[in-house]
Image: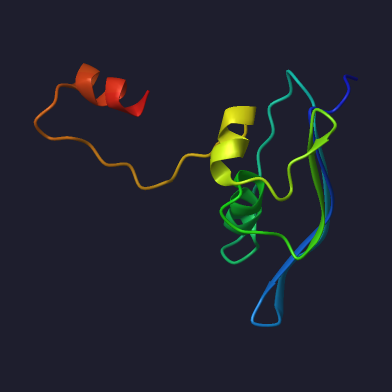
Length: 105
């Protein structure tokens, strides 16, 4: 198995004292596709928001290629290769399909 490119150790987050994520450990290795599933309210979006820097974790560490990215801004994480997309997709009605795809890129 390859060396993990992304490592999460002990990630935790609470909102108004209510724990959403506790002690999350995860390794992401190159060439492996992962899925994150769970019921509504399980913390999936919170985890992605922490990974991408939109929300700070209360506990734990995030490393990308051995470098701590836990306090980097979303912009800095994006430049390092950690980005996210949002579920709500919007199109530009006056553009063609190709034009809309180009805007996404």
